[in-house]
Image 1 (cartoon, rainbow, N blue to C red):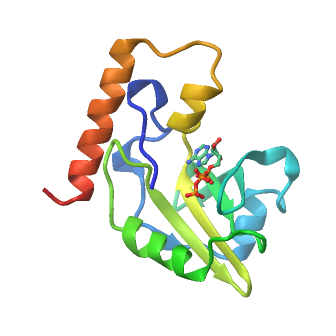
Image 2 (cartoon, helix red, strand yellow):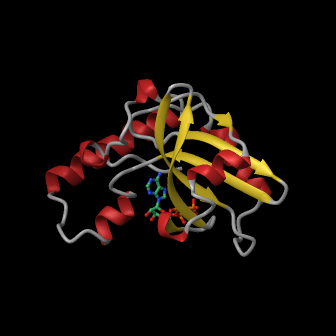
Length: 153
Ligand SMILES: Nc1ncnc2c1ncn2[C@@H]1O[C@H](COP(=O)(O)OP(=O)(O)OP(=O)(O)O)[C@@H](O)[C@H]1O
């Protein structure tokens, strides 16, 4: 689960425009990532490489982050389906939305809304300009709202 970091890291699309989580075909993923073009890799995490891409949903085109499970990952099928089950129903300004998933043979791929400024960890450790304390406070409050929603209170 990832948190939006507040106004400075809003996704490129509004919450109302985000569709329900759906099954995405492997060919859609191939088109979205230009067949897993290395130049579209924006990060690498516990799951594997993360690609930037676009997915067409009806008439709209969404900016997405596509996580492809690598065979070397210590995360596996159970974590994949747990993430799908947990996140597919959640929609909150302070939580990154899961837009789709793809299970195709050995391929397990998660599609999230794209965060133009990366994750909070990226923002805290990779950005040349440190966050002000006011922004840090706003981010903490946003994360708390996201957690509260997540816990269903
Ligand atoms: N939704 C997103 N939008 C933009 N960039 C993202 C997004 N998700 C991940 N990234 C990029 O990919 C990198 C790796 O992210 P990822 O979430 O896989 O890491 P992680 O913390 O190891 O998470 P996990 O272990 O849950 O897979 C991030 O540091 C970030 O740069």
